[in-house]
Amino acid sequence: MHCQEFLRHYSAWRDGLEPGRAFEMEQHLDRCLECQAHHEALHHGVTVLFQSEVELSPDFADRLEQRLRHAAVEHQAPHVSPLAVTAMAVLGALIVALAVRRPAVAIVAAEAQPPVVAHPVSFAAPPFVVFTPRL
Amino acid sequence: MVAFSSTARWQLPPSIAPADPNAEAAELILAHLAGDPTAFRSLVSRFQGRLLNFIYRMIGDRERAEDLVQEAFVRVHRHLHRFDPARKFSTWVYTIASNLAKNELRNRSRSPLVLFSSLRDKFRDEPLVPVQYEDTHSRADDMFHDRDLRELVELTVSRLSPRHREVFVLRELEGKSYEEIAEVMNCNIGTVKSRLNRARQSFASLIGPSLD
Image 1 (cartoon, rainbow over the protein chains, first blue to last red):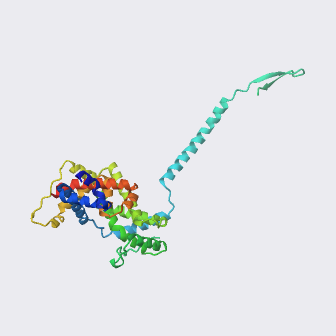
Image 2 (image 1 turned 60 degrees about the horizontal axis):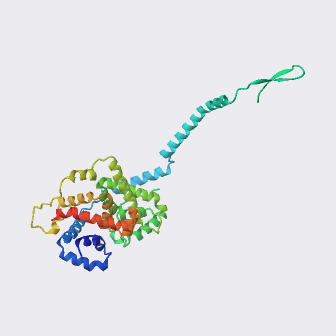
Image 3 (image 1 turned 60 degrees about the vertical axis):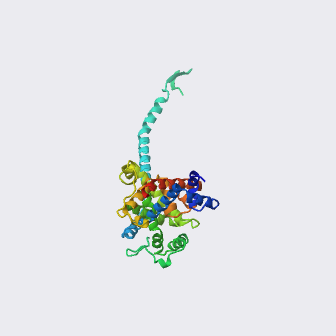
């Protein structure tokens, strides 16, 4: 086994996932100083990390309790999300815009209609001629 | 209604510490939902220390990590009634913690203040040199108590990419299975294996010269 192959299977071997390859891996580790150094570095580094674990501050419990109480109060109170407020504002603006725009639309619609033009209609009897709007 | 008392402590006696934290977590959840005022406190005590260290390794700031652990438990408390008992509680709570840590890193990258990004920048151009010990006759075990070495190892973890750091911490320090890691990181087991192999190689390569 070469170092490259050892390193490729190292992680799985370390976790015991390749029992069939274990003997070969251990053999390589016994005779390869470079791979031994790799293995030792990981092992020692992890050991040091375990030794430098952090601990909770003494007031952790009290602060958590306070946060949970606050969260419970917030949960009970009617909550209006910022998204809902924005949506309502947009809707309001839209309604106002439509209200302002509506007469203009009516005027435009009125202007778009053809002007009423009276045209003469003749009769045999008086008044002989009347002007009626063209439909 | 939050079932806490201001004088309550969060630690349970070791004599009743569970063999399987998830089995006991499931019992505590049921007890909490049934109205037991101490159950949630006990649940918190089971996981608070591990979560603190997990988040701390991810973001590198102890104070902020503690805030995020609290936020994780607030979310757990809020959604506990929807928790699927078929799932492992630890996987669920680690997933919440992982997401909070990732959000923290993302926010920090947008407005960089201190911590990993700046630490990395600060030390980027400096080679990792072997730690000098005052007493050269010390046994190897004694050397691990050296503060400089601890800082160096922590710095090495911070030099891993966030994905490699997370998989490395979950496996090496939290002892999670590949399946759990896959669920927490929202990826498949093959990805976990390859990321873990690369993370271990990177860590060993970075810390190796300093341990000589």
